[in-house]
Length: 450
Image: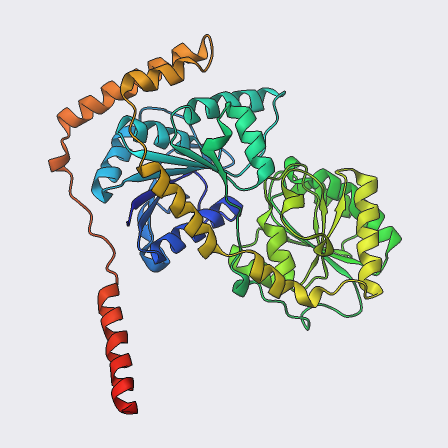
């Protein structure tokens, strides 16, 4: 049964990243499977309004104020009129939110449940339980997931983390990993220099991505292995620390800083290297290391979060998230490549067999089939769930839901559905016609044989 699906998240193209790539690839494959998919995100610069991407994927860039790392300012209720208009225009059945730090995602799920729609949430990150930011994020996540139909996590470690943070029943959480389009990350043995070992790093330059570890490890690795070269791509607040490290240690000839890289250019950078270094401090999955392995790079990464689940041991060299261990692991990887103990030429075909977006879309579709069979909760049943979120937080959450419900009633009264134009769907080839054409060709072949 085809569904009309709305993907909601603050994080989408033109910003590069794992969540952005996940939403785009999953949406494209769901469209290939016969579903209608739209994306709701915030405006990026002058990219506002409605845009169409490949395969008829429609994106709504809603103009909202961004406060931090492309997350919008949480308004709770002001998004509802626009959201309701989009949902009715596109005849949406399922709202699928992505990322714990996306205000747009949380608000979309709340409003969708108020409108009686089915909802799903995908968590892409790991969070702690002690610092103030994690405590607030976890409480917000508990509020949102108290009334969601199903939750998806990208790794088993991510599932354990999400279940604990949001106090969920583990049976309502599925694990569906990320994937890569292996054809877009083909290796090219002639692109890398045969005289030196080149280490590639492509990452957002933030603390949680291990940029401080990278800053400390690069001078030591260059001292131990003078013939090694680094290529670093990415941007962020920690970029200034990398530049200062290069100035202090005079490593400009050893380290090439590329700045921000568009996703379609990632493969061209990766094939110039032999080793991919991933010093992240926390990671739910790590799509970039799969892309690196597909390009034929030996991966050196920290043993944190869901990273150990991603690739087999012969493709990776693990290290503790510590400076000394990261330097030691990188040195071992360099020696292994120099002595021919690692066959990176077979990595691409192996990754191609392990990960497929078609498989991810099929598994996500089964989640949609499951949630569409469940019954919708009444307002009283929803309030009971929210009330159990805490002594004070539970009462505040119930108040938010009641106000949201009253706002929905007001919107239905003042702006009835018959006043909203229904959007035309992107034209598709009729599958029936294609099958009839195949049958005709088959019948002509049989007659020719006779």
